[in-house]
Image 1: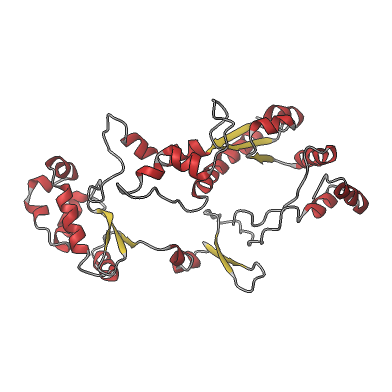
Image 2: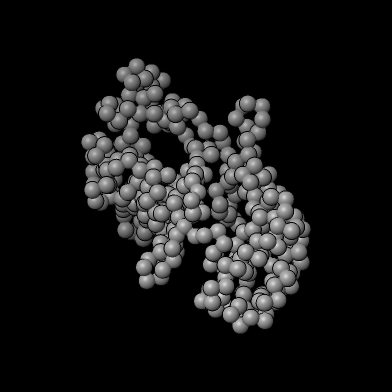
Length: 340
């Protein structure tokens, strides 16, 4: 998924000929995107300072685990470690006593990259205004803190929210997920409690929502200590009907709701399909693979269909031809192991 529509070449940057090819590519490039640790880049004169002198219009996009400064700047960083573990999300989004979350593969990488592209485009726009090239950087640590920012703030002592949250101690009993009689889960999302509580009183047979002044607002409910009991009652009611029955009841009353889906369902989502959010691609194994597409659309521009990723080095010959190398020169480069 991450390498569709990319051309894959392989260069030995420690080889003089390989380094020369890299400079030729950089001379034609708008952006140099890299996640190699800085000491290695400096040894090959591929750090920002070196390239900015040589290519002053180049946008240098640096993706790291822990940032460009500090004692840990050179540490290896992974999605699970720098994004999830260091942000608090791996421990504090689970239920007390349960095993730490196993996040979907590359979740943090994708979230970080999706915001990083906006910074890269800002730098490109600044270049059109005569600002020249610049260094744009992001890190998994920065992104993990940003994506979990609300919880990070709420956990500060002056706000007093303790994580992980108890299952039946939600912020709002009517903006949470509950298990139904068929074992599936349904999410409920109130639009405005002061207005919606009459609806919830009817749906869940909770007349106290209207009669008890302690339940008039969510703040009053929390202050009175009655929020947990309301959540328990809603949980009990939800187990009396199936997920499809609850979805019908809630939607009839215009309560925002959704059944929690499984990954295997998400790849067959009809709403996603009709909007073009999923695309089938043939990897030559006789069965199409469904891939999600990047989450943006432009009214005046189309999107290139996915092309299966090539192996690393699979496009080296084609790219070298475009740079003007002859077949004999390409053969010589391979023999000298400058390219693969």
